[in-house]
Length: 233
Length: 233
DNA sequence: TAGATTGTTAATCGATTAACAATC
DNA sequence: TAGATTGTTAATCGATTAACAATC
Image (cartoon, rainbow over all chains, first blue to last red; front, side):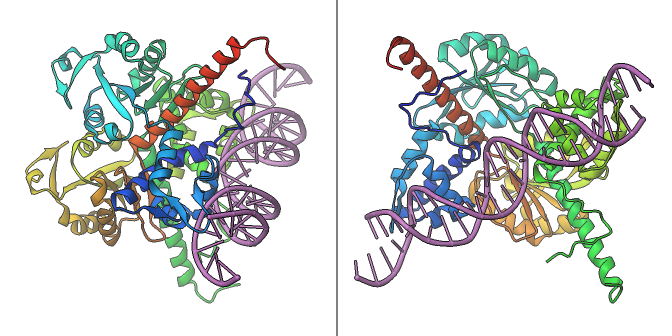
């Protein structure tokens, strides 16, 4: 459908790489905070918790920002990654659902410093409309359209119960939101062209539980094997 | 290192599959709540937001729990997946760091119903030790060892600021915790055999920002192309 | 020039998907 | 038996990694 222009030189960054760029950005910020001016791919990879070959391959999709024999200039690389991700500008964000999690998200200090600005907190419950959270007054969910258009909001965060998530997503999309971060434990469906990412506490815990169980089974097996020592080959 | 026993028939479930099993579990629970007794792979795939070939492949790693020509028994499959993940039992969990996010996590109702039980809330700040959150009193961080051993805690949740995360992780590992869910915006390193999963709000938002920016660029390009209509081939 | 480190190649590994034989 | 749907095969696609030539 979308014709690829030939002027841009095949700028397709793999999804796995895109997901790691923010990690590199954070690691570079930590290095800069420690007054480190230059780092090797090995240094940065260690700080980011990945292997250095992967890091260099990832960076190679952005361009050639290092110096052979020397390494990377921390500030320069940081700026290039920030620009590539798009967080040199400020993205207006709305949060819908100001329960416990919504409160925590609204108060999250990492927003502002990382290229995002919470322009509105919305909740369907009128009881919450008095409240001021992190300096922002909670407003009715029905104000979504007006706010989204006024601030040109492209990114929405859903922190409602599961039952409301699809409805909120539909309204967001209708209001022009094209990227959604969904904290509700529900699958939401959206039209093509809208991106959804999902964060789910209980799913993360269940993945850990699976591995825990496997470890437990392995231990049990090892012990049985040890007890039956000297058995058949 | 770990010798694979031959009695268990090569029970290696790919990581990508493991990460989807909890999604299937939730979808099956939703179907059961709607009094649906049987479903096809197509039905379940739709409910889980994946394609049906992938779903069937995933389920095939667990065993053969469907009936050709008929589909899957919802309750039976749900039990089999829960057993495979290990959430038919209850996992004791500790949460460290009872700020905004820690509060939200402690109050999260999906815990209990999904195989987890919060046995302790810990915080280093003595000011918080009076507090009772979700019916559980906040206790000193130094109680970690005692609590972890008493309840045989295998899973820990870190909801502290980034600066404390590595220290908390080290203490958890020393206390026998072998799976960590890390909400702090920091890379933590742990010994082999300890699993860490990371949930990071600002990274998720940055990934969305990247795609937003790409959409914006594409629109701009399309408009330029449209304006220059009738140009060279 | 010698030493260091990048950017890239190519091999390997793992995940996705369509298609269909098996079978209820 | 005819229709439906699973479980599996095999082809394809994407991600990881080691190794090293290029080059500062």
